[in-house]
Length: 213
Image (cartoon, rainbow, N blue to C red):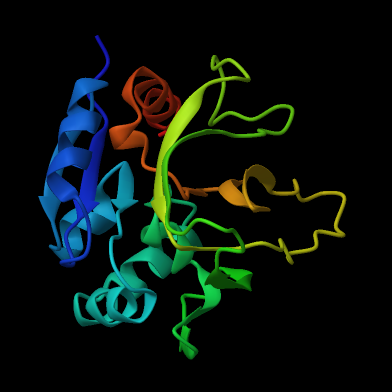
């Protein structure tokens, strides 16, 4: 019997760490909530949650040296997954209430207010996953996921011109205007929705991620 995959839920003060822990344990991972540097670096997978304002999350992440942990893990091809604001901070910048804050700049692009009549976008929604997606493998096209957000990335800006490098797989959803709902980019995956709150569909998605570790 293979050993359980070790996953650290990075605790920097801005995420639903307990619900993420329960969801990962449900799908068979050995989970620990911590900001310990060595444990975060050595885990099979690092999950970065996020709830709240972009700038505040970035401040908390930097205070916990999470920015450095994420960068070092990705430099070594070690899997990282961001959820909700934990996905948003992977982009270059975020604009909230007219104030711009720098993100981790793993991907170019700006997190901006949703362009919709009703904000926040709260509740269940379908997504449009690309062909060959590993993250959404085994899920029906009409599977629904739970969103709670007022900001999103509406334009994917990263261009991959090298035929030897696999282009990122981008999943979209729509609330008013289409926005990026998930990204699969080498060792770095992320979702705007909350898989840990998305029932069986979310459990399948987390199982798919664990299966790549």
